[in-house]
Amino acid sequence: MSTSTGPAAGASAPVDTRPSAGQRFSAWFGRNAIKIYAFFAFVYLLLPVAYTFAFSFNDAGRTNLVWQGFTLENWLNPCGAPEVCGSVVNSIVVAAVVTAMATLLGTLIAFALVRHRFRGRATTNLLIFLPMATPEVVLGSSLLALFLNILIPLGFWTVVIAHIMFCISFVVVTVKARLASLDPRLEQAAMDLYATEWQAFRRITLPLVAPGIAAAALLAFSLSFDDFIITNFNSGQFTTFPKFVYVSATRGIPPQANVIATAMFIIALAIVLISQFAGKRKREA
Image (cartoon, rainbow, N blue to C red):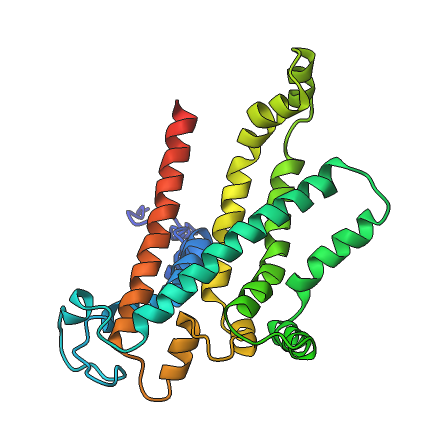
């Protein structure tokens, strides 16, 4: 009787348990979906900035819509186009005045809302949020009607007043968030050590609230410098940089405007990086 030398009868072939290519891709995509989304989100946000930076080196002449060639002349002479530097100076002056006034008034309002209880506090909180919730077109047209009814000529001061009304809400919200996170027992401890109210405020409260006030001031400056809609309603013949860019768009934005916009972006980015680095060093210390 002969015996078989082949595989045992009825034995099954080994099963491949490795995941398929589709399964591996699905698992990889699930692990990296947030990173992929973040990458495309940053590309979407930074693409206009990259366009502005690239066309600041365009040898454009009167129009800056088509790439003509590389040049450094725009950076060496950023005031070459008419009214560019004048409009930038106007925007900086307006933003500086608005930042000072809005930060002062907004900080006082935030302290009043957080540290004190008074009749009408809830209504005041609601009214503070209204400029943030109101569309800029509605706010700008309403302020224009107000200025025309009380016969205030449109110009620098109407822009300043309009921007202050718009920026105060953002300052209040920012400073309130910082105040709400403070421990009130720190001031009580200072007073237990015989500090007066002014000394406790100057040595304890103000240094702790200072980062929030600084953030509110930077936010107010950027909002005022960048605003176009409210400015366009209430500026009259007064020209700011956003208004200059809008008016120039019909005949071609000069490359010097791209230079100014790129420089402002770099300065803002540098401020953020420096503050982050300083905060990191402070935490490590």
